[in-house]
Amino acid sequence: KGVFTTPCNYENVYIEGKETKRMTIRTNSPSLLNLQLQDIVYHNTEFDTNIFEKGTVEERVTVIVKTFLRYQKAKSAIYSIKRLYPNTRIVIADDTPPTNFTNLQGSNMDHFRMPGFTGYFAGRNLGLSQVWTEYFLYMDDDLFFTNGTRLDVLVSFLDKTNFHLVGEQRHYQEIKGFPGCFVADLVPNFFLGSTHEVKSIGFDPHPALSRVGHYAFFLSALGRIRIAFCTTVEFGHNKTTTEADAAYRSFRYVGPEYYKMRGHHELFKYNFAC
Image (tube, rainbow, N blue to C red; front, side):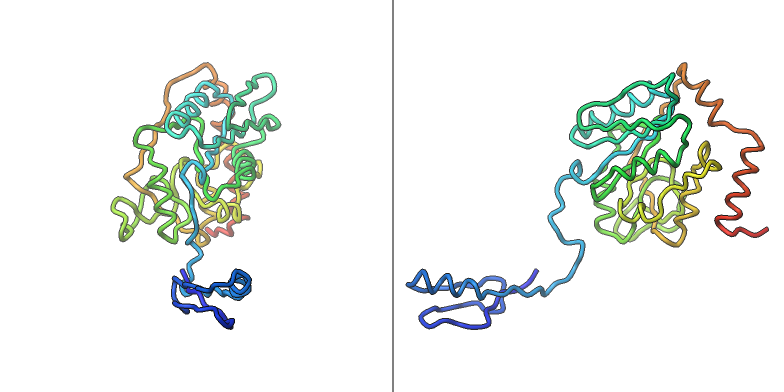
């Protein structure tokens, strides 16, 4: 992405190709050659911060799974990830109470045990804080990878556009050059995002969002990150009923008092007006 030159020439050293991408130096003296090599200068002629050695998808993406009580579903999610992307690191954020806790720690996987009932977004924040790869993929514990879960498609999309997050959801116009990908305001709880950009927003750990918080992050993200969804990438939703589901529903499915608290919090935070 640039050219070579040298500010000075030594006697008996012959240089061809100054100000080009390939420069040839000839001399019969190794000492003169070493001197001349010290004076080589490289100048960029193309400037693009996205140009670098990217590596494989598995090296560039960390998968975050937030779980609570539903270990059978979490294990199915983990198995589906490892089946298709065995070298991808997985971060599990778990706020299951101590009496029900099960250790899921495994190879290339970090299972973080949180205080019980800490909450949905607190778990997302913990998971995101442990990501050092360029991208992360977030998924709930009742979702799973299928043969149509093409992380390479999602990564390529973020690489080649100015979008920061891509998932699957309702949409506006199609994005030029990416058939099946559309501009969106929010996506479901299965999305690939730019780690740096999403960390700049974070997930609000307020108790008002601890039990139900699907769209709250996207309200915070409005006007700050660009979101898309692609119909060409699939994921699965595990709807089987387990023993843990009854306890899960008793905590996650809330009554009017919770929504009243949440409404007050959102009115204050987002400055909504009637």
